[in-house]
Image (cartoon, rainbow, N blue to C red; front, side, top):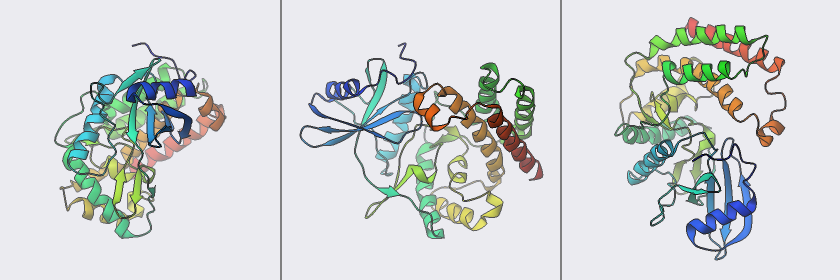
Length: 322
């Protein structure tokens, strides 16, 4: 399928019509947008009052096979009684649908408050949840998803930024030098590393605290094949060396369900560097989106790239000092 270039055609009539067609039920005119950086997510209401969440995937980002990998991981978690929200599996239609060139999935509405990390007991709870998640993640592979290894994802993101001429022309040589230096500095650290299915974007914004039910993981859009530590370091309040108590609480909870190779903690700062460059490539891919341009008017300017290069240089120094 050759889909639309962006979300310009995703108007309320298209959204509501797509959901009505998939579910075979009439809906009201409500199509309330929900926070989502790269996809488009809406809350809709059926005429009988039921609320449904519709997630429209950014065109060109994932292939159907890659989306199937994500949804299979979520389904595996649900079968293992890990608190997640799998998409609705409609008889004869499955979980992935298409309308007007857009792929989308539907979800039941699940409420919850944002997770707050106020005590070591909170880190212990999350560690337990991630240990259970990775037990399931290690049972299968995701052959069509990103591999969080410098020679794969990092190299691809660097090439995308350079080949696409996204970097300010005068600063491009400097950016390329620092990016290549990071690639050289971190690649060998991944030798012998375990790679499993991971959430990939496990920060507090993607964990709901549901009173009376516990924690729930949401938004597996960045799920990948990666080191288990990828799902831990984003939850830390600072660099690992500066928050040892929080890290140890995470690991204690994790190891109640699954062993963790503590030598792999050496990957935290390399993974941070990889995420910094991934985030730049991620922004470049949606820089023509009106919503993105409104929120980030300075993106791509010379001052923007000068600051990003300075941040990458600082991160390279941190890695070298470890």
